[in-house]
Length: 310
Picture 1 (cartoon, helix red, strand yellow):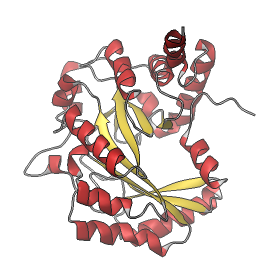
Picture 2: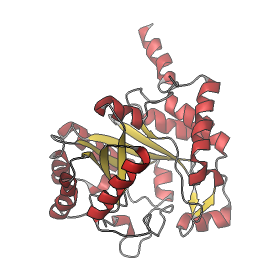
Picture 3: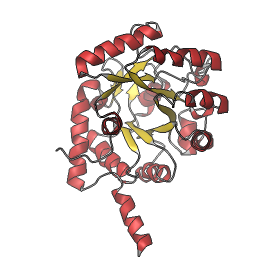
Picture 4: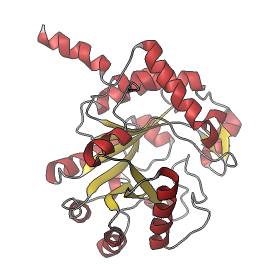
Protein backbone atom coordinates (compact mmCIF):
# COMPACT_ATOMS: atom_id res chain seq x y z
CA UNK A 1 0.00 0.00 0.00
CA UNK A 2 1.30 3.44 -0.95
CA UNK A 3 2.22 5.56 2.05
CA UNK A 4 -0.03 8.56 2.72
CA UNK A 5 1.56 11.63 4.25
CA UNK A 6 -1.65 13.50 4.97
CA UNK A 7 -5.37 12.83 5.40
CA UNK A 8 -6.65 13.41 1.88
CA UNK A 9 -10.24 14.16 0.89
CA UNK A 10 -10.34 10.99 -1.21
CA UNK A 11 -9.35 8.91 1.82
CA UNK A 12 -11.90 10.74 4.00
CA UNK A 13 -14.71 10.04 1.53
CA UNK A 14 -13.75 6.38 1.16
CA UNK A 15 -13.72 6.06 4.95
CA UNK A 16 -17.35 7.28 5.00
CA UNK A 17 -18.83 5.76 1.85
CA UNK A 18 -16.52 2.83 1.17
CA UNK A 19 -15.94 3.89 -2.43
CA UNK A 20 -14.85 6.75 -4.63
CA UNK A 21 -17.04 9.85 -4.42
CA UNK A 22 -16.60 12.56 -7.04
CA UNK A 23 -17.14 16.29 -6.68
CA UNK A 24 -19.30 17.96 -9.33
CA UNK A 25 -18.40 21.69 -9.48
CA UNK A 26 -21.22 24.00 -10.57
CA UNK A 27 -21.72 27.70 -11.22
CA UNK A 28 -25.10 28.59 -9.72
CA UNK A 29 -25.04 32.16 -10.98
CA UNK A 30 -24.11 33.85 -7.71
CA UNK A 31 -21.97 36.95 -7.51
CA UNK A 32 -19.81 38.35 -4.71
CA UNK A 33 -20.33 41.43 -2.51
CA UNK A 34 -16.74 42.37 -3.25
CA UNK A 35 -17.55 42.63 -6.98
CA UNK A 36 -20.53 44.97 -6.74
CA UNK A 37 -20.74 48.70 -7.45
CA UNK A 38 -17.70 48.74 -9.68
CA UNK A 39 -15.45 46.81 -7.32
CA UNK A 40 -13.16 44.19 -8.89
CA UNK A 41 -13.04 41.87 -5.92
CA UNK A 42 -9.90 40.29 -4.52
CA UNK A 43 -6.84 41.26 -6.53
CA UNK A 44 -6.25 37.68 -7.69
CA UNK A 45 -9.87 37.10 -8.79
CA UNK A 46 -10.21 36.26 -12.48
CA UNK A 47 -12.79 38.50 -14.14
CA UNK A 48 -13.98 35.82 -16.56
CA UNK A 49 -15.94 32.67 -15.81
CA UNK A 50 -14.43 29.29 -15.06
CA UNK A 51 -17.14 27.72 -17.19
CA UNK A 52 -16.99 28.19 -20.96
CA UNK A 53 -20.67 27.38 -21.41
CA UNK A 54 -23.20 28.62 -18.88
CA UNK A 55 -25.68 25.75 -18.70
CA UNK A 56 -28.72 25.76 -16.42
CA UNK A 57 -27.81 24.44 -12.97
CA UNK A 58 -29.66 21.15 -13.43
CA UNK A 59 -27.87 20.52 -16.72
CA UNK A 60 -24.51 21.25 -15.09
CA UNK A 61 -25.21 18.65 -12.41
CA UNK A 62 -26.42 16.07 -14.93
CA UNK A 63 -23.51 16.65 -17.30
CA UNK A 64 -21.04 16.52 -14.39
CA UNK A 65 -22.45 13.23 -13.14
CA UNK A 66 -22.39 11.73 -16.62
CA UNK A 67 -18.77 12.79 -17.16
CA UNK A 68 -17.61 11.51 -13.74
CA UNK A 69 -19.31 8.16 -14.27
CA UNK A 70 -17.41 7.65 -17.51
CA UNK A 71 -14.08 9.19 -16.49
CA UNK A 72 -13.77 7.99 -12.89
CA UNK A 73 -16.30 5.13 -12.73
CA UNK A 74 -17.81 6.93 -9.74
CA UNK A 75 -21.30 6.07 -8.51
CA UNK A 76 -21.71 8.66 -5.78
CA UNK A 77 -21.32 12.43 -6.05
CA UNK A 78 -21.05 15.68 -4.12
CA UNK A 79 -22.49 18.80 -5.74
CA UNK A 80 -19.97 21.59 -5.21
CA UNK A 81 -21.37 25.11 -5.38
CA UNK A 82 -18.00 26.60 -6.28
CA UNK A 83 -18.10 29.86 -8.21
CA UNK A 84 -18.08 33.10 -6.23
CA UNK A 85 -20.17 33.50 -3.03
CA UNK A 86 -22.76 30.75 -2.83
CA UNK A 87 -24.64 32.13 0.18
CA UNK A 88 -25.00 35.65 -1.19
CA UNK A 89 -28.73 35.62 -1.96
CA UNK A 90 -32.13 35.38 -0.33
CA UNK A 91 -33.00 32.30 1.70
CA UNK A 92 -35.69 31.45 -0.85
CA UNK A 93 -33.30 31.52 -3.80
CA UNK A 94 -30.62 29.62 -1.92
CA UNK A 95 -33.08 26.88 -0.97
CA UNK A 96 -34.39 26.60 -4.52
CA UNK A 97 -30.88 26.07 -5.87
CA UNK A 98 -29.61 23.81 -3.09
CA UNK A 99 -32.77 21.68 -3.28
CA UNK A 100 -31.87 20.57 -6.80
CA UNK A 101 -29.57 17.95 -5.29
CA UNK A 102 -32.69 16.10 -4.13
CA UNK A 103 -33.49 15.19 -7.74
CA UNK A 104 -30.44 12.95 -8.02
CA UNK A 105 -30.27 9.80 -5.88
CA UNK A 106 -26.57 9.43 -6.73
CA UNK A 107 -25.81 12.71 -4.92
CA UNK A 108 -24.73 12.02 -1.34
CA UNK A 109 -23.49 15.44 -0.31
CA UNK A 110 -23.31 19.16 -0.89
CA UNK A 111 -20.36 21.57 -0.66
CA UNK A 112 -21.00 25.30 -0.47
CA UNK A 113 -18.17 27.74 -1.10
CA UNK A 114 -18.61 31.20 0.39
CA UNK A 115 -17.09 34.09 2.32
CA UNK A 116 -17.12 34.23 6.12
CA UNK A 117 -18.82 37.63 6.02
CA UNK A 118 -21.74 36.23 3.98
CA UNK A 119 -23.35 33.82 6.42
CA UNK A 120 -25.76 34.27 9.29
CA UNK A 121 -27.80 32.01 11.53
CA UNK A 122 -30.72 31.79 9.08
CA UNK A 123 -28.48 30.75 6.19
CA UNK A 124 -26.64 28.21 8.33
CA UNK A 125 -29.95 26.84 9.55
CA UNK A 126 -30.94 26.23 5.93
CA UNK A 127 -27.63 24.54 5.16
CA UNK A 128 -27.91 22.48 8.33
CA UNK A 129 -31.31 21.17 7.17
CA UNK A 130 -29.48 19.01 4.61
CA UNK A 131 -27.30 17.25 7.19
CA UNK A 132 -29.91 14.59 8.01
CA UNK A 133 -29.66 13.11 4.52
CA UNK A 134 -26.39 14.41 3.08
CA UNK A 135 -22.75 14.98 3.88
CA UNK A 136 -22.51 18.77 4.18
CA UNK A 137 -19.44 20.98 3.92
CA UNK A 138 -19.19 24.75 3.90
CA UNK A 139 -15.98 26.34 2.63
CA UNK A 140 -14.95 29.68 4.08
CA UNK A 141 -12.39 31.54 2.02
CA UNK A 142 -9.91 33.02 4.48
CA UNK A 143 -6.70 33.09 2.38
CA UNK A 144 -4.66 34.47 5.29
CA UNK A 145 -5.22 35.42 8.94
CA UNK A 146 -2.76 38.32 8.63
CA UNK A 147 -4.28 41.81 8.57
CA UNK A 148 -1.71 43.31 6.19
CA UNK A 149 -2.29 40.56 3.65
CA UNK A 150 -6.09 40.70 3.74
CA UNK A 151 -5.87 44.45 3.21
CA UNK A 152 -3.34 44.13 0.37
CA UNK A 153 -5.46 41.58 -1.53
CA UNK A 154 -8.60 43.69 -1.08
CA UNK A 155 -10.33 40.76 0.57
CA UNK A 156 -13.05 42.91 2.10
CA UNK A 157 -13.17 41.04 5.40
CA UNK A 158 -10.74 40.28 8.21
CA UNK A 159 -9.73 37.36 10.39
CA UNK A 160 -12.31 38.35 12.99
CA UNK A 161 -15.06 37.77 10.40
CA UNK A 162 -13.71 34.29 9.78
CA UNK A 163 -13.61 33.49 13.49
CA UNK A 164 -17.16 34.75 13.95
CA UNK A 165 -18.47 32.56 11.10
CA UNK A 166 -16.44 29.54 12.20
CA UNK A 167 -17.60 29.56 15.81
CA UNK A 168 -21.21 30.33 14.86
CA UNK A 169 -21.14 27.29 12.58
CA UNK A 170 -19.39 24.87 14.93
CA UNK A 171 -21.21 25.95 18.10
CA UNK A 172 -24.76 26.00 16.72
CA UNK A 173 -24.55 23.67 13.73
CA UNK A 174 -21.87 21.06 14.52
CA UNK A 175 -23.06 18.68 11.77
CA UNK A 176 -21.82 21.16 9.15
CA UNK A 177 -18.19 20.47 8.28
CA UNK A 178 -16.03 23.56 7.82
CA UNK A 179 -13.19 23.82 5.31
CA UNK A 180 -11.02 26.92 4.97
CA UNK A 181 -9.00 28.16 1.99
CA UNK A 182 -5.43 29.37 2.44
CA UNK A 183 -3.07 30.85 -0.16
CA UNK A 184 0.69 30.59 0.38
CA UNK A 185 3.15 32.91 -1.31
CA UNK A 186 1.80 36.42 -0.84
CA UNK A 187 4.70 38.91 -1.04
CA UNK A 188 3.34 40.55 2.12
CA UNK A 189 4.32 37.50 4.20
CA UNK A 190 7.56 35.83 5.21
CA UNK A 191 7.92 32.06 5.35
CA UNK A 192 7.71 32.28 9.14
CA UNK A 193 4.40 34.15 8.90
CA UNK A 194 3.01 31.54 6.52
CA UNK A 195 3.92 28.80 8.97
CA UNK A 196 2.36 30.91 11.71
CA UNK A 197 -0.88 30.57 9.74
CA UNK A 198 -0.66 26.79 10.11
CA UNK A 199 -0.04 27.10 13.83
CA UNK A 200 -3.07 29.39 14.20
CA UNK A 201 -5.33 27.05 12.23
CA UNK A 202 -4.14 24.07 14.26
CA UNK A 203 -5.84 25.59 17.32
CA UNK A 204 -9.21 26.14 15.63
CA UNK A 205 -12.15 23.73 15.17
CA UNK A 206 -11.87 23.46 11.39
CA UNK A 207 -12.54 20.12 9.71
CA UNK A 208 -10.70 20.65 6.45
CA UNK A 209 -8.34 22.92 4.57
CA UNK A 210 -7.50 23.74 0.97
CA UNK A 211 -3.98 25.05 0.41
CA UNK A 212 -3.08 26.89 -2.80
CA UNK A 213 0.14 28.48 -4.06
CA UNK A 214 -0.19 32.07 -5.23
CA UNK A 215 -0.35 32.23 -9.00
CA UNK A 216 -1.00 35.12 -11.36
CA UNK A 217 -3.91 35.06 -13.80
CA UNK A 218 -4.61 37.34 -16.74
CA UNK A 219 -7.27 40.02 -16.39
CA UNK A 220 -6.74 40.49 -12.66
CA UNK A 221 -5.52 43.47 -10.61
CA UNK A 222 -2.76 41.19 -9.35
CA UNK A 223 -1.50 40.75 -12.91
CA UNK A 224 -1.08 44.53 -13.18
CA UNK A 225 0.79 44.66 -9.88
CA UNK A 226 3.04 41.77 -10.92
CA UNK A 227 3.78 43.44 -14.25
CA UNK A 228 5.07 46.52 -12.43
CA UNK A 229 6.76 44.96 -9.41
CA UNK A 230 7.78 41.42 -10.47
CA UNK A 231 7.68 40.24 -6.85
CA UNK A 232 9.11 36.76 -6.33
CA UNK A 233 6.90 33.69 -6.68
CA UNK A 234 7.66 30.24 -5.32
CA UNK A 235 9.49 27.75 -7.45
CA UNK A 236 7.93 24.29 -7.32
CA UNK A 237 10.69 23.09 -5.00
CA UNK A 238 10.26 26.07 -2.67
CA UNK A 239 6.52 25.54 -2.50
CA UNK A 240 6.90 21.81 -1.82
CA UNK A 241 9.34 22.58 0.98
CA UNK A 242 6.94 25.07 2.57
CA UNK A 243 3.68 23.15 2.17
CA UNK A 244 5.15 20.01 3.74
CA UNK A 245 6.22 22.03 6.78
CA UNK A 246 2.78 23.69 6.82
CA UNK A 247 0.95 20.36 6.88
CA UNK A 248 3.26 19.01 9.56
CA UNK A 249 1.83 21.68 11.88
CA UNK A 250 -1.78 20.60 11.26
CA UNK A 251 -3.60 18.03 13.44
CA UNK A 252 -4.11 14.62 11.85
CA UNK A 253 -7.91 14.86 11.95
CA UNK A 254 -8.04 17.86 9.58
CA UNK A 255 -8.89 16.75 6.05
CA UNK A 256 -6.39 18.14 3.56
CA UNK A 257 -8.69 18.73 0.60
CA UNK A 258 -6.08 20.33 -1.65
CA UNK A 259 -2.33 20.82 -1.51
CA UNK A 260 -1.97 22.82 -4.70
CA UNK A 261 -3.93 24.90 -7.18
CA UNK A 262 -3.80 25.14 -10.93
CA UNK A 263 -5.18 27.16 -13.83
CA UNK A 264 -5.64 26.82 -17.60
CA UNK A 265 -2.52 27.71 -19.56
CA UNK A 266 -4.33 30.33 -21.61
CA UNK A 267 -4.99 32.53 -18.56
CA UNK A 268 -1.98 31.63 -16.39
CA UNK A 269 0.85 34.16 -16.30
CA UNK A 270 3.10 32.64 -13.62
CA UNK A 271 4.44 30.41 -12.21
CA UNK A 272 4.27 27.94 -15.10
CA UNK A 273 4.18 24.91 -12.78
CA UNK A 274 0.67 25.95 -11.68
CA UNK A 275 -0.84 24.93 -15.01
CA UNK A 276 -3.29 22.04 -15.21
CA UNK A 277 -0.86 19.87 -17.15
CA UNK A 278 1.74 20.11 -14.36
CA UNK A 279 -0.57 18.98 -11.55
CA UNK A 280 0.73 15.41 -11.24
CA UNK A 281 4.31 16.64 -11.28
CA UNK A 282 3.48 19.03 -8.43
CA UNK A 283 1.78 16.30 -6.38
CA UNK A 284 4.69 13.93 -6.94
CA UNK A 285 7.21 16.61 -5.94
CA UNK A 286 5.29 17.28 -2.72
CA UNK A 287 5.16 13.55 -1.97
CA UNK A 288 8.90 13.15 -2.53
CA UNK A 289 9.57 16.17 -0.31
CA UNK A 290 7.53 14.64 2.51
CA UNK A 291 9.57 11.47 2.13
CA UNK A 292 12.93 13.25 1.92
CA UNK A 293 12.26 15.37 5.02
CA UNK A 294 10.67 12.56 7.01
CA UNK A 295 7.52 14.62 7.54
CA UNK A 296 3.82 13.84 7.69
CA UNK A 297 0.69 15.60 8.87
CA UNK A 298 0.88 16.49 12.53
CA UNK A 299 4.52 15.59 13.07
CA UNK A 300 5.51 18.99 14.45
CA UNK A 301 2.66 18.80 16.95
CA UNK A 302 3.96 15.55 18.41
CA UNK A 303 7.04 17.20 19.93
CA UNK A 304 4.87 19.78 21.70
CA UNK A 305 2.50 17.05 22.94
CA UNK A 306 5.45 15.10 24.31
CA UNK A 307 6.75 18.21 26.04
CA UNK A 308 3.50 18.53 27.97
CA UNK A 309 3.73 14.87 29.03
CA UNK A 310 7.17 15.30 30.58
